[in-house]
Length: 300
Image (cartoon, rainbow, N blue to C red; front, side, top):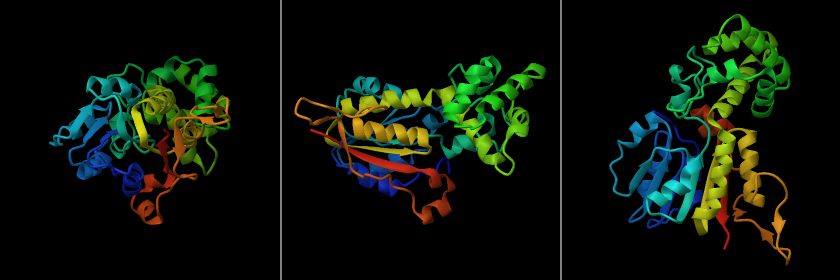
């Protein structure tokens, strides 16, 4: 299977699919969520996004008159909807992070389990790779990336080791990077540590948090009154941004209020606490363990 979608039943329940509505799946991947939405449509329409070339090939397998695929980053959602004659939608679904296919492809460089090039691009046509970042970034910038996006406690030390290692030989493969950091990884927690390093680089390569912020702000513009926003996130940085946006209409800071003290925000949270995958699903799909599902409804 290209990708096993997480919490598919809960996601569709959150969307409250109207058979005649217009929906957006901004993270097509292997098409699991999109196909499930299409099954519920009768006269409605689905626009799906993904910047990955492999995802595009999966999308080409779907022959459904209600389906349109856009090969683009979801930060350009509003622009591409407009190009397709759409100004408002009934609901938007986002399954953040990387697909099982991307993780399991050694040549993409996303996983610590395989030796492969330090690539990590979700859009294979993008110019910046993880190798380029590790080669060009000064120590202070590497420290910032590893600390902010990987939440490493010893980010400064890790950055120093990378700079020292690259001075003697180029860091071109995943193994090169693991070897450069092996001495600074906490004993017994190496796998988690390396996963955090790879997460930090992946976020930087793909500008994931900036893209997420751009996307969330556009949701308030395109989702119609009573429409739903459904987001699956896989680490605390993403989930915090989604939670703050739903609660305040912003990524950071307190919710603004009008002259009468009413909260000025585009959405109301449907679930106060994030929904998590069942033990049964986690047993079948380990990736579901860290997933957090948040649902919001567009205010009038």
